[in-house]
Image (cartoon, rainbow, N blue to C red; front, side):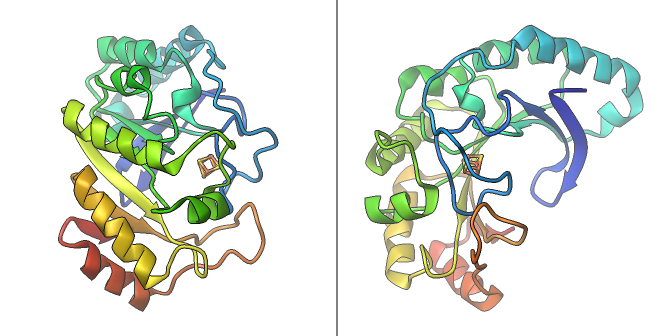
Length: 239
Ligand code: SF4
């Protein structure tokens, strides 16, 4: 299988079958904490990086060969080796998958393109969207996510607010916290104000535990995460 991986068991999504919609590290960000390594060319160009029909063919084959395992799946998850919304046919992929299985679809996205109406609309038929928001201010955004230079955090936030108003499924907002970069108490309070406006179904606090793109990327300790969880309120959990 070239585009399908797993199923992977996680606390967050249960048993999930992964699909990648881009080749390795086609991404609009170059996050310091990325587990995939560095992005060589950050891009926001939307293209059919991987032909949707090839993904569908693979998925059909997997479902035929794994009838029992397919019944246990909690999600088919778009994630993998780059930013899934960069694949311009993501809406068609969701529509085609819905024709062949009842397994819910989750989209993990860095949210960089959610300011575009066409991208938000492309995700409407998904069941769950897991967008990231690591920064409340441009300087922190640049430091942690290292986006393509024309991507602005204010536009991402507006995109997330718009998504919540338009999207009928669940939104679980992920915040990745890195020690010394975005874990200042003042920053967490600013994030809270923004997240209140976005109004996701869940807020998931994360901190890097595996190998990251840059060296010396440190996790925030558990006690501090617990404190942030308290600030962010009852919808917040540490993952
Ligand atoms: S958005 Fe995801 S894939 Fe892209 S650099 Fe960040 S962590 Fe890696």
